[in-house]
Amino acid sequence: MRAFTTSLLMASILVARTSPALSAPTQKAGAAGAASDTVTSDVRCLLTMAALGQDKTRQQASIIGVYFFSGRLSLRAPGLDLPAAIKAQEIKMTPQELPVEARRCGPMVQSAMQSLQRAFAPPPGAQAASPPVATPAPVPASPPAPK
Image 1 (cartoon, one colour):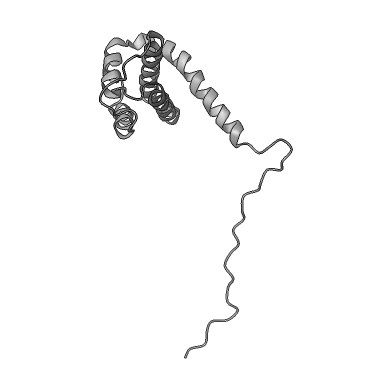
Image 2 (image 1 turned 60 degrees about the vertical axis):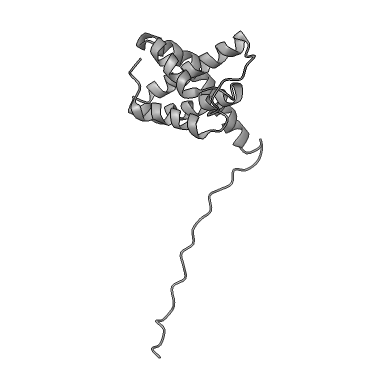
């Protein structure tokens, strides 16, 4: 599929190349079929998130999704050659699959974001802290006397 924007696809590849866990040259041996399917599924989600970034109103969500699935892949497949995995799935995916993948992958990102929001929320019953108020600098009463 060639519908991905160059900038988002390059961002996902850049994440892969700058992350030590993702940039290892080979995939670790002994990966079970289920683990391989999970990795493939996450690569497809990463590509879907990159494709969603073509819509200007979804670019921020798209970038969050790219980082989310890059992180999952880093954990699940530390030796994965991510640029090669992206290219392999990009060839297989069709534009018709994107809405289905978006419906499958989007809720995973949303759930993670909601979990983070709850984690950073004030405890129940705690009063929300008000933002600090900037006070203006004092103005001298009279100009300094010349020397």
